[in-house]
Image (cartoon, rainbow, N blue to C red; front, side):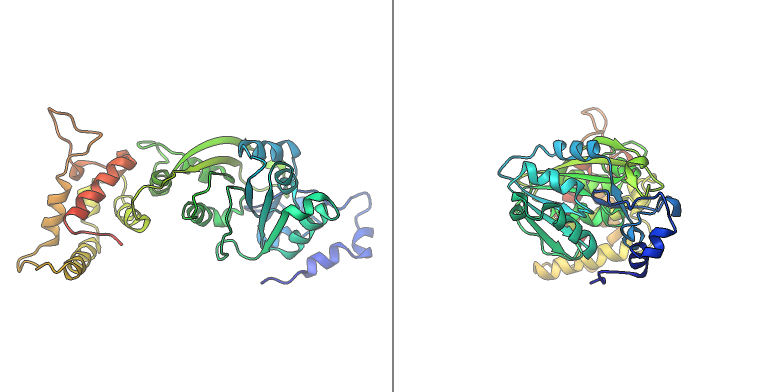
Length: 343
């Protein structure tokens, strides 16, 4: 667990530090903590050493209220907030929900959030978990709202999708490029393994653009807010299986599936997994078993979205860049039926 103070934090509150900056006020501000690259020493938040955790404080109250509004909160909701920063989002969440559970890595930020509700009715509605969100055990929650520390963007999304019971939605701020990759459609330039994996388990939509000037210190990248609605009930597909297949086909996404399965190590992976499946299911392996022949046979399966009654388009000749999530699921099922698994 990080210490509560640092050298930079101490200096920013010392008399000599204040005297050396006449006319400048302490940036007490409020907001959630996001991450990205700092915009320069001139934009440093002097109240906190925000660079220590790569945090950028959301300071625009209109943006903060807009994010909370997009969550469509109910008075009975329990809200999970990741990276509350100094509480700009938190106070708005508390006003619209039954309870807010905030997960914060920095003890100083956690103390600031507590100060904002100290002695108010909202104090009883706030619970703070001090620690690393990625390693923390998540409590029950209906909705997640986060000005996400960008270095945990992918881990946060998949941890939320694995939460049970399934949350109603998550409204999350990400680096613009990451957000656009999340909502990418099959065949588009940004379609890839990330979008395929997330869209198998949730509906994702881009709801808001947020400029750099809304943060202190301003990051070097633009941000976007996305809304993720996990499918409930979730599809009966093991994530490890689906992701294992996508690792292969999206490793060379502009090549055909046949070429992807010819890549180094794939033949050995299929062979080992097939032998394991046979052992578990008491199946006898043929003496002349050839994993490449098995792969080629499965790849001759027609692609549902590309084939017509008059012409069949097989996976062997299709590129991952144009395969939809349902197409990839069909391919996974075709392999599973033949005893080939990817997890």
